[in-house]
Length: 175
Image (cartoon, rainbow, N blue to C red):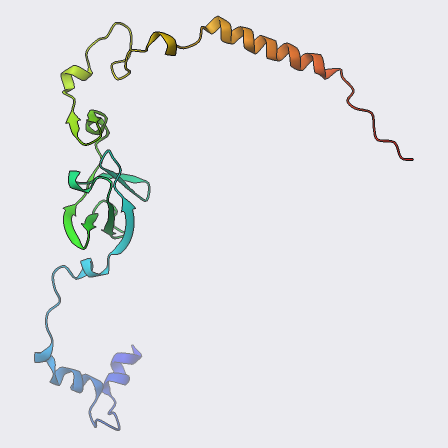
């Protein structure tokens, strides 16, 4: 390679040394690189932690610590390692985020100022034909009867077919 065979071996007119001699004369001044050198070159992204502790980064959901709920945070990450994401709040590290476990996140009951984990056994109990995670509906909020929906749909089709033969408004006159 030209840089090894020519450039580093030719004497410089000002220093009267080859670049390789000049570099190797000061080797004791060099320090070793830190073991976490790659962490100094991470990308930053600003996000808001949601009420369910989740944070989204490039379409992936992560769990944030509870004290960060509702706060703006900075995420530090590498493009080549998207699963390793560190969270900072006011330049203080809160550690690395874990990928969101949707089963556990669905069991968290959220209230205004507190979080409560619903036990697994309570979630899977049979409730008389209703899905366990739906609250029982009140009488005035029940779904409309399917026969009513069918009648409305048929009426809409009849109205549309009645207008199909209508020629439309007359063209404007050119007088």
